[in-house]
Image (spheres, rainbow, N blue to C red):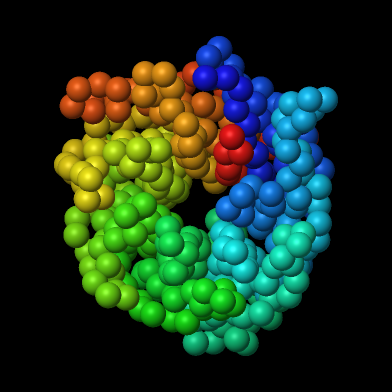
Length: 383
């Protein structure tokens, strides 16, 4: 127990927040406001957390790299220093980092960006993969376009990029193609080779995120349009559907929501998923499901459903902390862009017999008001 830290990005504001969470006191606070190059909708560390990589919703769209300044006796929290940025053709919605490169995904295409081995800064975009046949003809202007709820093509194209636990595969969830792309990762260069295209289970699913289980065999696909989370298992390079479940209450309609995130507890015994209301009057939800040691669902009935206080706006993103409380409590950071706050939820199900527990909001902090609320996007835990 003690003080822990995580970073929070925003959709439009040029600031990166360092948050501090004292789990013993149940207190959340802003420790520092770091100057950023623009709105950072997605954040990702490298393996040893010496660098932070982000999407940047600027014109033209870019990716930013930062050096992490670890806590010190004089400054007991981490900060960041901008290293450099690279311009992308399409607006990126997601980044993840391997030892040789950062992988970005957005709309019609994804980029592989080589890294400087000494500083962790970007070198050059060494590869661009297309999710659609005509993506190569898409201009930078096209990549910035789209309606307010299209985000430059992100709601109708590739939306995520996550590496397998051993780093040998990259999973890209593609809302528009209704599939998960699996790429082989070259261990020497980090370059990608297409391995398979696995279609979603339902025609209206719209895979948003594909999150791997630590066993390397199972992948969870969060479906933005149907508010389902599906379990897939590797059959060679292909993904085979195993099971799936709704992450919203049975009395609601999936057409009123757009699902946001799927993640696991530190023990991998619990799957968490979140969804947002498409309209401000529709509240979002965070759900919890029990998992078997294999990574399969123990039951399609949720252990708990937590209604968020707002629709979540563009966010309602969840990120479990890498640590647990003294009684096995799981802490989740929850972001909101409708009112512009960050909250900590406590899940106590893993500490109870049968896993039946509840979500409780421990604390929340409003980011502030500038030209409207500052919309919290996503988080990454530093310690």
